[in-house]
Image (tube, rainbow, N blue to C red; front, side, top):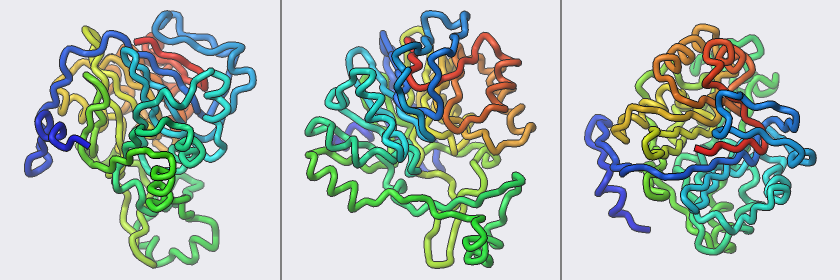
Length: 348
């Protein structure tokens, strides 16, 4: 691994002040295809305002599989990158077959974060990658995650969680999420002759294409609530999603494309981080999970108002984004909003 590239174009100084990465002039062609998502729909009609940029699937997904998960195929000027492995139902394996995509085309795979709906099919898919392919993830992806199930939308205090963990667990109010285990990842990589790159820093995936590295939190209120890290037998801390990785792509003469897995750091934080490290203010497209399913109307309006100021050409919230947000966005920004399902293609 060439460590020098991390430091020639990107530096982090004291106090989390970020200096710009050189994204150069941008890619000529960018194609993104949704391989795994929560929904399959062969009758979905596209937004006519986005004709030529967004294409919805038809008969090709008649036998495709949906699941609670997300995975994208990114093709940049002939370079193929996989973003996430999808979930535990192994839907990506069936869908790759349907779309006639050979897993060996992927030179690099980026894991957005250590939740099972994004790494779930890793151990089935990784052996199908070509030897030498890179899997890029944060070392924090292996942390044990825990979720509090708030049926009424309430927020649990971490002190109460620690005092009542056993009771909450017995009552089904908390759940330890299936962990990503480092030993299993390393063993799989060794057997398949893959390269594991664990880093908190941005990595250049291709010219004008970078991972976000650890996403700067400008607004803590944007963080997904009720998710925690288990750091001891009865010891927890709030998850600030230091393992989350977005992908930032500059498209020539159009601006930045922001891709997210779940957006647990907050979609506004994620976009602002992109602008800060790229030095580019124009956001062309935002595609991925925004994790707004648990958000209040006030939070949803805050994001929509931000998008109205930003005016990306394309906004596509999938997976954990939530019906309510997409419904509001469709009303407020009908020319910019599109749905994404298994097989949706973006030609940017």
